[in-house]
Image (cartoon, rainbow, N blue to C red; front, side):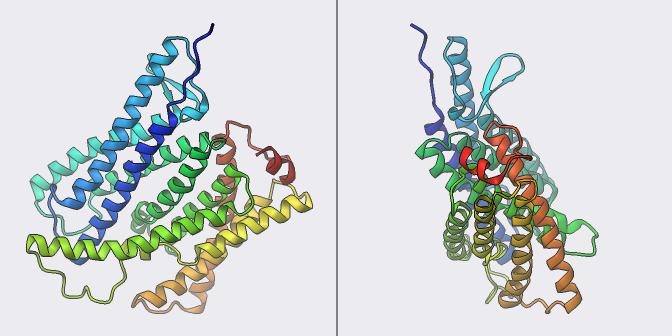
Length: 371
């Protein structure tokens, strides 16, 4: 009798997701702390929360990699539903792809966490958010969240895999403005951070729709993200003020009336953009349109809507001056262009996540049925 197959993905995915959620909440709290209070040290509660998130994800990833390696050596098969196809590492370990990615993100976070500790030991308080160690830490957390998406997407045939994807993908989308904030350093004739945010959220919505291959999937992802956005909208300022009172630090003079930093950086009309993606893919399947261009069209119309409404959102919730007509048109068109590219990337990445060849030449109807 051959040894049985193993599938440790469900427990590992739950722990990695927990770590990703802790990192999201901790980072949101930390950013709001910088906005409302300002200086911080290495050992603050927001820092400890986001550090614990990476530690939890990293330990879970390491345990699963060791378990998968031991199972492989014992002659048992580790299926893709255990977190992705196994990858040989250093010729010794057999690491499921998703857990390998999340583990690499957590390990790099540990390294840059030490760099952040060194940075604080030299400069003391951080008065701004965009210090070099912080940017590296945020990127590391994003990599861990990508690993969570790969883990759950690989198990899309199971209920826990679909549920995990419905949680992990919105977490990564919520984190995208934190990552794209680094684009502000680019000297471009348009808002690079907003364009990058459109690219990420549209790409992930298309990826989720193509991975689950269910009508209304993109809308479901956007709805879950909206619920998370509302929760963080309340939590971030409350946590910053409560902690400031506890440690005896005053708030900045101009805090009152400003929306929370991270939740306000997510498009409030993302749900409408997701509906457009679902509608475009549904029409493509119904009319047998080619998948060579349907994902790009879906991404483009969604990107146009998200870019335009995001500028209106900033007018509603901030004190920024209204953009002139020419700037509004340019930013909207750039959002459409980035959205089209995001649709292309999201559809192809979904094929990779499913372990298939990119479905470039097949009709959307066949893709939908196969998926």
